[in-house]
Length: 72
Image (cartoon, helix red, strand yellow):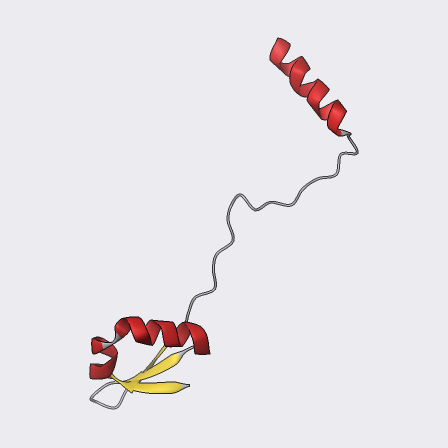
């Protein structure tokens, strides 16, 4: 993991973030000797990404149900 000084990180934040994304993380050392790690966060799944259900229906049956529902 690459370590950067706090001042270098402040001057090159975009480069630091790209490096963290590529390498999985970077360390930043502050002037008082503390270390901080910047890591990319895993992407959250979409709430619309749901598992399908096999109802055993054909495409034709589904279309018939839709047409029937629209008649009412």
